[in-house]
Amino acid sequence: MYLPKRQRGFTLIETAIVLVIVGLLVAGTVVGAELLGSARSRALIAEIDGFKGAYFGFLDRYGSSPGDYANAIRNVPHTTVDGNGNGLIESMASGAAIDEHIAVWEHLSGAGFISSGRYRYSAGVETMTSAPKVTFGAYPRIIAGQQFAGAASIRNNINTGNLGPANVLAEIDRKMDDGSAITGVFRFSAVDTVGAAPVEALCVRSSNPEPGGWLIGSVIETNCGATWLL
Image (cartoon, rainbow, N blue to C red; front, side, top):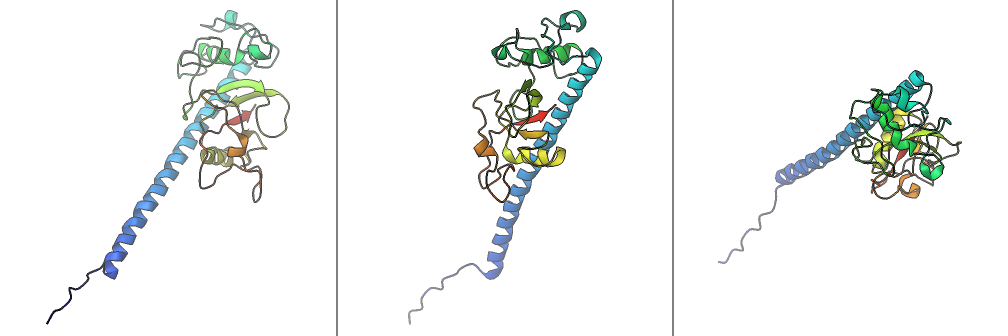
């Protein structure tokens, strides 16, 4: 008599083991991504704090903002350019005689307030020899302006530059400020120093349940930027 072959499938135990393994792999991936994001947020927070400390240290010592200091050549070692001393760190495009936001780094490094390198002024865009980079790979920029979300007057700001993931900037905002991308002292910024400018609509939520919050959905925008208002 012909007997059909038994179809052997997975047992309940085998299926459960597979599901547990898959679950552990997924959980490990999620946790790994979260740990990486937290590490990057801590790194950028440390960088922002360093720039703030350098900026205010320079202001306290010389009575003027770096980049804008009109007597830098005379008083700051290894310095080749003076600012116009009007209180705002400006670019040549906005009427200054030099790109003061580039001179910022020469003034700060010459005065010993940053130790990441000795930077030399060169007009135009930031380069490896004229400015440092932050953890995302963009050049930070200390400059006067209003290229940030929400209402405020023109003032000197520390900009992270672009290339920042929205979820990382959201975590920094929660830790350092009010968690909103359009209020407080830490906000979305459209300043770009490497590649394309960030788009506010891709980085900031415009609708409920959290209008003005950093936009964190199934797809995370990785070309965002932020400004710390000085």
